[in-house]
Image (cartoon, rainbow, N blue to C red):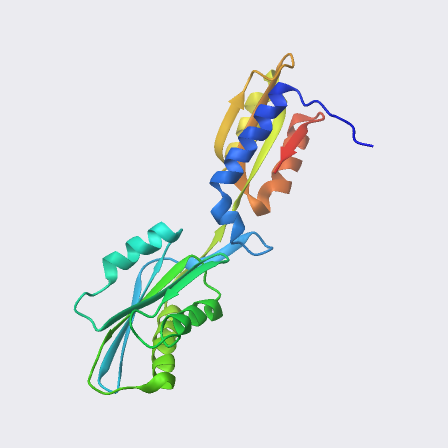
Length: 233
């Protein structure tokens, strides 16, 4: 039997606020591992190698989405080069391009190098200046995949923690205590809503590092010394 449940209007706003936070954080959340974090590179790096007189230049850079990937490509590609082949990965989203090389001999090897590296939110562009000697299908795969792998192997990396949206109902007299705890946990996007429909109750929403969410909840309960109602998404 289906039972209709009416949610108070202020709770609609709470969930809408949490949903907006989650939506803004969607790209990050979709591409993380189960640990809620991902590894990316800190800065743009370059690796160059000559293979049978052809010069291969791999350039890797951190990206956040397809738009930033295309922007990175436009910045680093060389219009004078024979080929500007590339691949990028953002979570489970990825694309590659052979840019005129035989199908599957450039973009896919670059993509495989990215996947093997364990690095996320990264684009690798491999520029080739043809040296007059054909490498063959196998040679191209090894050349493009090899310089991409070496470029990523030498890149400085960093671990990026994702943010999770939370909310908590707080009585007016405890807002100062709650805000102090939120600041100590370095949360982001704090929003206070006093129009909850409950006398003396405010709703505070925010984003916190995934691995700090439970600790923050415990700290709030301990410091407020009373029952708190949390909302999570």
